[in-house]
Length: 95
Image (tube, rainbow, N blue to C red; front, side, top):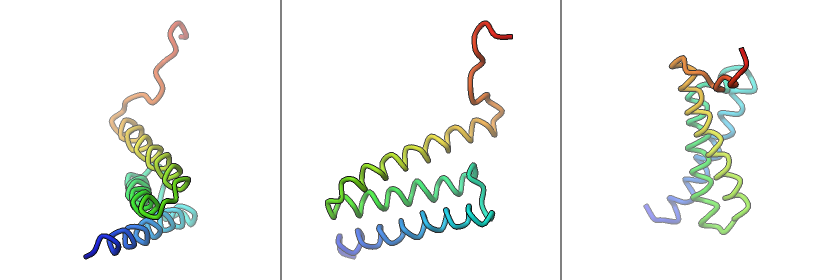
């Protein structure tokens, strides 16, 4: 496989993952807090970062870096919810 083919495939797989996850969320087949939904967004954003970097589409690269960061944050946050950890620490002095 050539580098160019890898970049093209990365972009198409990214599009399928992002659109697929959004479509499944929209029709109620997936939950926004599910690890699968977030991983589809992480991998999809990474594919777009690869493709857009190669093609010099820097605004799209920036968007997908943020998109990937949000998904990574959600994965970490949601894993804390499953472990029973509080999401927001209690406010000091408030009982």
